[in-house]
Structures are given as C-alpha cells and as structure tokens.
Image (cartoon, rainbow, N blue to C red):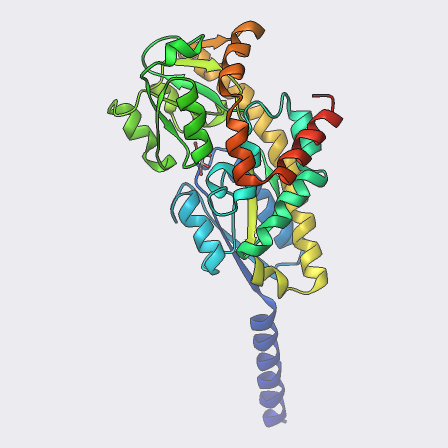
Length: 331
Ligand code: TK8
C-alpha cells in the first residue's frame, strides 16, 4: 500500500511538474520611460489581463526606465529574441523599418481622433504589417502624444527665434532635416542622455509631449514650451516574430486581445496624464506659449519640403495611403 502511495505521489509530481514546465510561457517587456508614465501603466495593464485570462500560464516581467537600454537597443533585443516585447517611439523605429518615416510627415495629424482612426485603420495596419520582414510583429500603437518644442533660452513664437539654437532630436534623419529647415542646429541624442545634456547646457532645446516633459523632469531645465504639436510619434508595440508565430492560435488571440484592451486603457491614461502634466508645468512657473494659426502656419510652410525626404524613405505608396486616410477623415 505504502509503495502504491509513493508511486502515485511520484507520478502526480512528475505530471504536475512536467505540466507546469510546459505550460508557463514567460514574456519579458522592456521600455524606455519612468513608471509614472502611461506607457508603463499600459504594459502593467497588459500583464494583469494576460496573466489572469491565461490563469497564470503566461508570466510577464516588465523592465521600465531604460533598465535594458533605450529604444534602439530594446528594439534590437526584440529582433534577436532576447526580449519579447518593447514599445519604441515610431521615430527611432524608422531606422529599422523605413516605412515608419511616414509618421514623420510634419503636422500629419491635427487631433487624437484622427490619429486613432488612421493608426487603427488600414493605413496603420499596413505599417504594422511592414515590420514582418524585420523579424518583428506589430501589436498596435500606444500614445506618446503630440510633440511640443521646449528650450532654456527664450520664448519661441516664430522660426526666426530658433536660429542657432542647439536642439536635440530623436535618432531620426527626417527630424534632423525638419529642424534644419526651421533654422535650428539639430543633433540626434538617445533619450537617456537628454536630461543631463539639457542640464549641462550642451543642448538648448528639445521636443517631447507634455507627459514626458513632466515625467522626465525636462521642465526643470527647459523654462519655455511652445505648443507646436508638430509631430505625433506613437509608441509602436512590437513582439518577437518567432515567439509570436510559435504560439497556438488561441494564445495568439489572448495576446492580441490583452494588448488591445491595454492600449485602450493606455490611451485614456495618456490623455489624463498629459492634461495633468501641463497643469504641473504651468504651476511650476514655466512659460507655455500657444501659437496663433498664422504663427503656426509660418512653421508649417517652412517644413513643407520635408515630405520629399519622407517619400524617398517610406515610399510613395505608404505616404499616399496616410495622406488619403487623413483626407478621408476631413484633414
Ligand atoms: C523613450 C523615447 C521617448 C521619446 C524621445 O523610450 O526619445 O524623445 O519621446 O518617448 O521613445
């Protein structure tokens, strides 16, 4: 009897251990921003949904705040399979997949509604599908936000005010061309080095959405903010292609659905946090300058030629798809 019990217990242990070992699927996520940000909250939501919907079969670990590197390193890690998921801004992702330069068309979107219609529609989907050839699968777009110009020197209301200012851009050639056309002196720099560069006055100016100007404390070292909303560069959520392709159909659906819900949540948080950030920055005594339509027009006119560079990089087909989608949505 004793032997039978020991035997049964052994079989049971072996079965559960084997089952457990086979069943648990580990997912690692790395991203480049602090834990107070909407991007982080979005990934936490994804973890919660996926772990609970899979009854713990999926285990998700998140590494925030550049712990595993900046956007470029994180994207490389996902390509190599050392990391499962990341969410770089579309601008640095464009040097991996040139199609993403399409999102660098200046003033492509005028409001959030149009952004979501386009990104969640056929144009956004075609862009995500283009990642396939780079060993990535795109799961969707989270919000980083409309980008605004900040600097430590003086109030900026026209391109002339930018003359000679040293301005940090994301690692993206179209952005560099854009700021050159406006008369600034742009240079690319990884996000992780930005605060120190501004603090030490190696750089005078930069551009980011309100939420990151706040959460990365850039407003401490950038007194002036001009609401230019010149580019909307979303976070593109990417997963290692092999990892995704090896999942069962039902697991793929679990991931897709969890990410869709997480993205909806993330976008709501981004909107709330962006408004709060603007408030905090204003209360801190920073100068926030809104531009009149005429002033904004001056910026727009100067950067129009950038579209030719975008066409060269992203191709006419992708550019036309995004532009006609914009027109369809009444832009
Ligand atoms: C963080 C970056 C950041 C971006 C930048 O990973 O570099 O200015 O706005 O969000 O992607």
